[in-house]
Image (cartoon, rainbow, N blue to C red):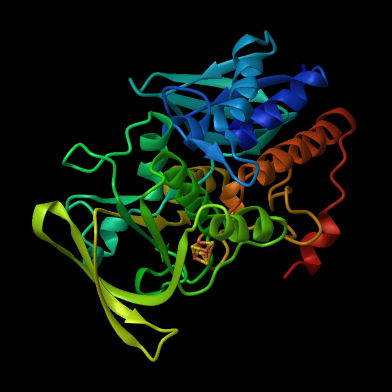
Length: 360
Ligand code: SF4
């Protein structure tokens, strides 16, 4: 059989894997459950990427172009993997589209790169998302920024903005005790973008602690304060209330200053909603027979030594389905998974049986 690799998911990780495979003259079957290629960054119309503050389209569009134009890539959109059977030389895969039409493809290896979903802040009902006007999530604000429509329900740019970190992450009440890793950086990046568009706006970030690891400490955390005058308040916020003229009143405690009570009005509140595996990747895990780790993400065969190798022979992993990731991490993992899949389909390399026994 001619060597083909199935890539599930056309976000940064899946598109990056596709590009590498095409460069190595491997045919790709690319399956995406949404109508368009590009994954969450395209679906939600991401604005600037941190920490370099460059447009997301500069990164994702060239990857989409390869997948769209290469004759080596056969694309299925609005489609999911319905079943996977092992065959003599790989896998027989059923792909089902929205109209329930089923197509069958035979492939030698699989890369699962179906990504994450943003936490739905309606699950934190006390924050009033979806109920109180002018409360948004960082995933909503990306589109407002990229379409240049950052206005309140009164049609004017917000002059007082609060951003609340760790919504749906580090929170046992919603079952997510992990840190989503990127939402501090995204929030600070959004605060800087807001200050550039509305220079006289007051922007406050409410935090438990700030996790701008590595180079982002300087490029985002300090820069946001020194150049943009973003304010940081260590606080515990208990609820939001609707105020006069569609303002939002936040209530809580300033935990840095003797637990002083906070009752502060804002024009707009932004919730830094985190990342979860989501139903799409959960379905992929089920169809492929992959185990989940304790936080609900897909568990690689060995997270330390083989983060892009799954527990099933011939199946590789890339991107946020194994845990919260930045876009550049996902692109890197897509490249790594493509290399591993290439080794497997061209040389039959699968040297991981021993690790399977010793992996914890
Ligand atoms: S990255 Fe920041 S906002 Fe996101 S969960 Fe971690 S500490 Fe909270």
